[in-house]
Length: 566
Image (tube, rainbow, N blue to C red):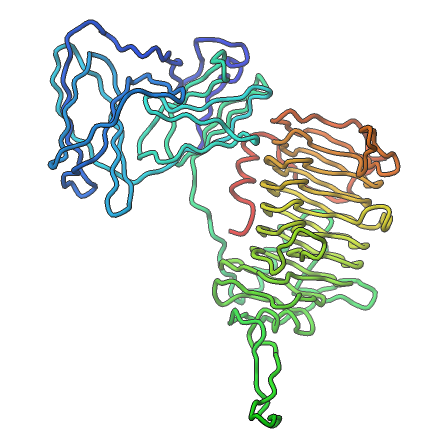
């Protein structure tokens, strides 16, 4: 469910003090006063209870004006409940918010109570503590630096450079969230429930504030041995990888892929190699000779089978590769219905074709140094072709998480996540090493975040990137260099530099023309100061059908939540 609050951003841009739209409250001032400041004080008594209804002694309580907006400094002190969970406070008539906090057995809980005191009022209330939660969101206010506050509570947060913010340690309930620029010239206030996610995009005056209800991830179902489930998977394929059959096909000596009946291999152990003793070969000290053999039922055992193989996993787990896994043709690695994690030395293809990686998390590399010896999670090399990477998560790799290079082509990356690295996808080698015009890559509906350099770094070949979300990538969302031809459409760029065209720049900042790429951009959304690059990619257009989603907050949210292993 989504609540759209229309025209609020337009009001922000115009600096209106009266905000429009159903479900909005007008922004409140924070002058430290409450209604009836000269009238006689009223009293408020509160009993704090634990979740089971028993009294909560020594709970911490603080009462603030109901329209309080934190500026980072506060004079109101916390009070403490007595042995029976009671506390009594005196206050002038007006609206208040009382926040209650408690820690018991190292577990924190809390509650918020909102009420109004009338003149000469004596009010008694009970509040029951509950689990803590958080509010998360993204605020795109163009060049402004937004501030997020919870009305009535001492909560003040500035989003990071990507616009992302989290307000944690909130109890269950409905809160008014105040969004404003630092100078409080433009602001909006809306009701919000912990666990929801807020998108505010005011880079476009016609855009809307949207609140997305968080949902439980829909886990993929284990396909069993039903080949119709394999066919259903193939039906979802788009981009250059179309024609890939994985375990349902076979590659001939010319590289052509045709239908074939594959076998099913179920991975039953997380072991990779086993150390075995040869009791027929014993030295003078009585020590038997040992050797490493591939563990029966292991990932490596299934991957090294001859012929088309549909690789399924009996159980969730981390499959640690003690040496690089070098693949043959015609394999489907299908982690649906399981939490399957590949760790260690990574996967390599060399002149391999007809491969599918579905619902896999690549994590915990064996080599973590920041140099070229660092293994990629998945390397598609040496004229490999027809490779589909779908709903995979790449994390924790130091340099590049996935690379496609040395003539590899007809590759699609879809609905995948790339985080915690320098670069998500490396496409091709720099032009001074090799000039490659044959390589081709589609990247769509994928999420790039927490990358210290680029989302997709392309050198040569053709790249089609559509309906992706580049969220706070520090340098460029897409680099299109070394004569690469790139079509970049309907992406959301939440970083300053959406696309870079040159690999090298001179000391004076001028580009090195020999490293230029050629890009065509259309229908992208820029939420952090990015802008389109003019060009036509030398006429490049993909020769396949595909489905593009409109670049807006809705699609960004869907990509962020639905990409990666499910």
